[in-house]
Image 1 (cartoon, one colour):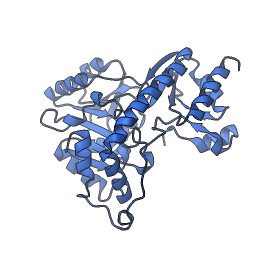
Image 2 (cartoon, rainbow, N blue to C red):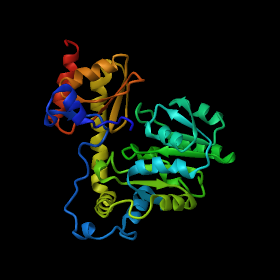
Image 3 (tube, rainbow, N blue to C red):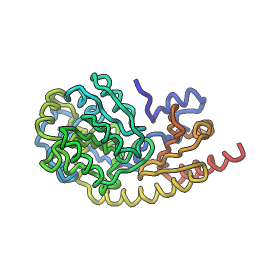
Image 4 (cartoon, rainbow, N blue to C red):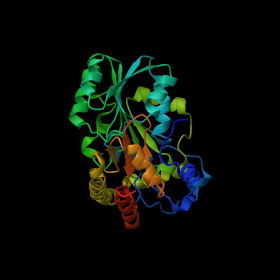
Length: 330
């Protein structure tokens, strides 16, 4: 199993700090997620069914009805490579490590290009190009027009563009989801998740946007009831709550800038609305310094990166600020 953020129990044992005393900033999940109301008993007692309004709510929110709900985007990440002809995939990296791992397990070859080198990835003439936008973990962003042009270039040679947009909800102007699988971009596959912006990682709800033929094969491969009834209901309600979405985007934008400014003295910082990534040769040392004070961030063994999520309240902000100030005297 690959390592991910959110390993509080392991950190608690390693640093001998009680679990309840940790400030977890390792995941990039909205710490003030959508407030889940009490759910009707029927969603617990009946098997999930299509036609419950989830697909309609998702089509309205994402602007595209060519979709399939999945148990988080992770289910699609693991299954999609098994449904496409084996070939070479150009990965714009560094990227979420489950992507290349899933392609390799399915028998594909992987090639890696730096996250600023999409033109080089396209020039490699591979059948597939894969990227995250905004990118996880280095927070680089690709403009929507750039990605649509890349999809068009790949289409001319029968290729596919796969875009993981797990972190794009706060910046919808970057998204290509609305065109994925349509006649305008039939070779474009977009992955979305309710885990990050909506803060519903535990619900395990995501969506794949692609052409109907591929979605049909994916549905067959995943089998029935791949998303639970309670999760479907929570997702439907969250996707319909436009007032919360607008307020959350405003709040996250301000919080992201605050975090960027906190980390700026320590090196180069790129930020999304949900996390900031510090590039510095001291990233590993800073991760250890924060961990010894019960603040969990995400470090990457092979890269000089430190990814830091948003504190959920003012007490968390003050704790992070104090710990960063202590770095200079530690």
